[in-house]
Length: 67
Length: 167
Image (cartoon, rainbow over all chains, first blue to last red):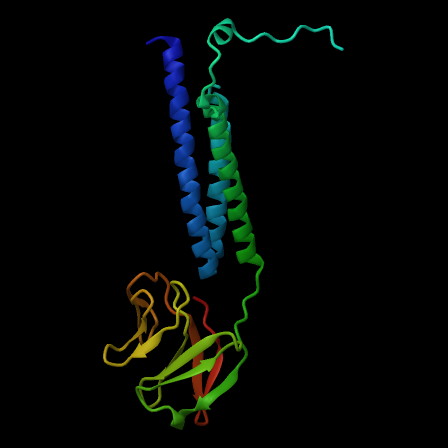
């Protein structure tokens, strides 16, 4: 496989990965809202930590996305 | 006036000067960047929700007399407000000596629940949620959390609410 073709596929995979991370963020917001209603501090902080980690991962993957 | 020559369009564009709607579309990188920004906003929102959960104070209620025990028949309910006038609550006398009380708000979307004696359960008519009469746990329907329980006891023939029970 040519290098440019491989890079193009990897770049597309990054977009798919970012979309999946975004979907997980939406799910985590619903979990956080449920934690607030249930007054579950541990779950709320765990959700927030995971959400921040996913955001950082998504931001890091942007570097590998070709223009 | 600048001495710099004007930027010339590409030869093919000069020869075939058409405009395509696609020229205004966002690039893949921009699209991904918007997604990441959205993910960042949600992460900030999640941290905010966690901080709110940590910092807010929940009114657990002060001990207060609700109603005389004699005025509530066995198997009957009594509506009251607790801990504030904005919080509808209901108590159930399910034996001669035992009384339970719950917030009347369904834990799904906040509709008012009522007691179904024939089924021995609290029923939410909005989305068919059902809760156990004595414990308030979810029996069926969309709610995932039990009804908010209120600690009650009988003192000298009067039912007292002592405070909300933490879930």
